[in-house]
Length: 353
Image (tube, rainbow, N blue to C red; front, side, top):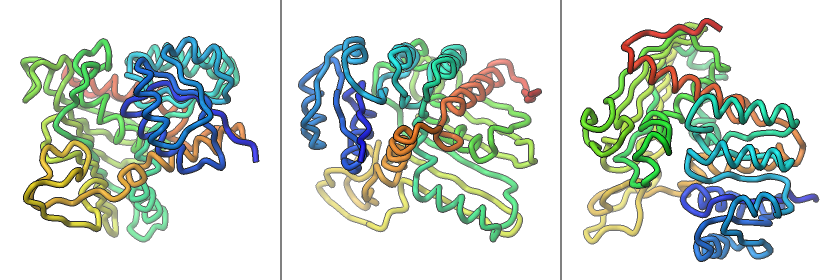
């Protein structure tokens, strides 16, 4: 069986998530290169997941130019997504791009246009779409046993990113909405085939207008109401003011039932520790007392499923599912941009397309 040859660009948090997923499907994929500014971190990542036959690079330009690969997996800060994607596409490679696609709609559009011109593919890494709990929720919805969906409430929230790249709009494109709200926005757009009708939004404003993070240029709280073309309503929230661990939640209210999903805190284990556990769930500030430790968190959050899906698609030379294509990342960027416009100008925005 032919293996997909992958170059991972990045060696920090997102690269770790993707590397774990690749390590589970070794029969399909070979990691032929890893690029990162710190070669010690590159080698540590490879050792952690058992990658041996790879070349380490400390410069992504050199890696893209020299590495003999089929696909470039971009696990870098937001502001580098556009530049590195364009370079990889021009080198004749397919690309996996982490969320969000870019820091501006214009850059995301350029990425999609370049891929189309060169007949290459961008796989957009939206992990919610492969979270087993969310996929089960969609199966229930599609079965018709709860009736037509009327209203959806979805949110991703935690206490804030400590990355220096998350503090400035130049590097990240915004605040909590583009970092965290990107998940519910993309998921619901995929659920409704990108067909929305109207939105209105509010944000905390950034800096001194933020609720907690006054040194952050982007907002630390954001909410949006969206009406889809089929009449379904949705509330989307993202914030950096939620302590106690990351919240990934969705509630779907239907004509004949409802579905409630909690990705982070609904595991099968409950534990109590006086000194504190080593780890419970992403972004949890403390691990003492009662907690719900995550079980195979990377699998449950969807990272493993999405990466295997991308590998399978790249081996076949086909697009990913709706929600996981470059065009879906672009549509998500457009909606987030309009959420910011609505909040900034205090207006409701209709989709005229």
